[in-house]
Amino acid sequence: MSEFTYLHTMLRVGDLERSVKFYTELLGMKELRRNEVPDGKYTLVFVGYGDERSNTVLELTYNWGVETYELGSAFGHLALGVPDIYATCEKLRAAGVKIAREPGPVKFGTTVIAFIEDPDGYKIELIERKSH
Image 1 (cartoon, rainbow, N blue to C red):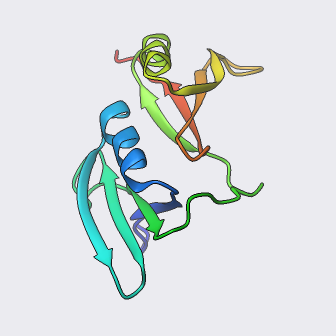
Image 2: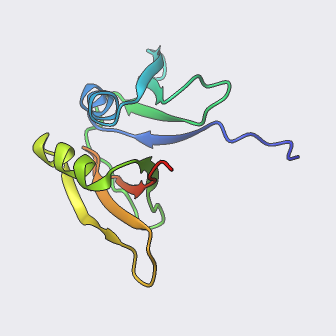
């Protein structure tokens, strides 16, 4: 057993409320906690699908007054499992979410995936995980 525990991934966002709305209302996460740091001029919001003690979560960092970031070429994507990728993509498309890769099998495989983008352009891979 490892001595390490994966706690969270942090993304810098240009509009905190827009990002919180995206992750909570469209992707079904819950806002777990919020920390305003006036001396540092930033706000942290942690969102996720369950309690931080037993789930990896997403930290959204808003540096006051910074509206855009260069995403760089090193970061790849976040990944979320969904039961019906086609229905999920249609629901997200109807809500105005950018579908960066339409649902379909991965090249040389059978896993069905799609890619969407969050409001800041971060890629999120959706992986179909049908219940048995």
